[in-house]
Amino acid sequence: MIIVAGEALIDLVPAEPAADASGTGGGRSDEGTRPGPNSGAEAGSSGGRSRDGGTRAGAEPVGTEPGGGHRDGGTHTGAEHSAGTGRSGGRHPRTGAPAAPAPELPALRPRRGGGPYNTAIALARLGSPAAFCSRLSTDHFGEALLDGLAADGVDTSLVQRGPEPTTLAVAHIGADGSAAYSFHVEGTADRLFRTPETLPAAARAVSFGTCSLVLEPGASAYEELLRRASDGGLFTALDPNIRPGLIPDADAYRSRFRSWLPYVTLLKLSEEDAAWLAGPADPAAAVRQWLAAGPYAVVLTRGGAGLTVLTRDGLELSVPGEKVTVVDTIGAGDTVNAALLHRLDGHAALTPSPSLTAEQWRDTLAYAAHAAAATCSRAGAQPPYAAELAVPAAV
Image 1 (tube, helix red, strand yellow):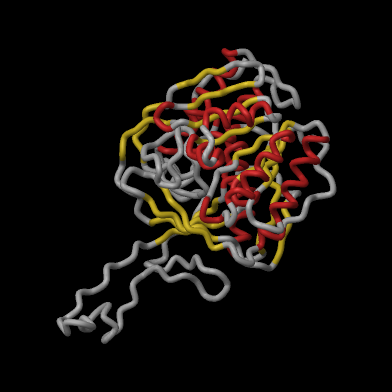
Image 2: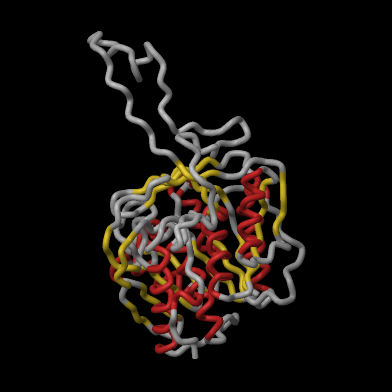
């Protein structure tokens, strides 16, 4: 069993996807810094349309008000029209001329999401026994998140519950399919996560990442779980998936990140994440320093250039991204996380000290690029099922 520990949230995404773009499957785009669909694209969204046109993991849009607010009644996205306000039917406050109506804001559609949540769903769809370890609200969004896990067969025995509202992330989709996010996290349920006393005996790997490692007091609880899992002989994976807007002290977080590395087996991050975490240092040199600090391997997602792995054994190799017509890149990076873990398991490498040949690493990276490209080909975080990938089993 692979346990995924971290946040679940509701993404509010535009009801109409951005215009299709063609690109290469392989890199980060959730911060809007690297356009194009890439197999290492980092994201934190869930839901989206499946290929049959349905909405397997999300709700239908509700006019221009998504109902995606907290318990105080929602966050309205439609422009309000009232005479004399300057927004519709009023006059310009300086010139007195009739004011043009304010442009309508886009209708938003709530989607199940969060990087760890998406990773757990993707693992289950690829055929790996997966469990989700987090804290969900008892509100209607929390119930929807729990239902989404159950629908894909994810074990929820490690899910804690609480009455606080569900975290919200508002997605802004660029014309190239890239996504940027704003977060509403104060007083939400997932921040109050507590380290479980024990993990299932069947657990062989635990994956961590994203907002859950930033927002206290939950961040300290997840950190304790990371150390405990590593000390207990489990394979541990870390995807920092940096959200700068949620990190009040960058240097303190960078120091904390380095303190995790002795407890990490696989570090996966985008080039953008690496540059941010390196700070003023050279990112390439920083990656090698991080590798020397403990991880067996570092996997870098590199935009259209694909993915690169560096290992403690001195191996360094890359695979190209995969060409795909992009709908959006939401969830692509989370699919990469899941695909790496799933394929490593196929190579019997989910151990504290794995050892893979160059060919096995090439197979693993290519599988991750292929899976992420499938996610980019449809709206929202809709990781592929194993049968959709049509690739040989790992050997």
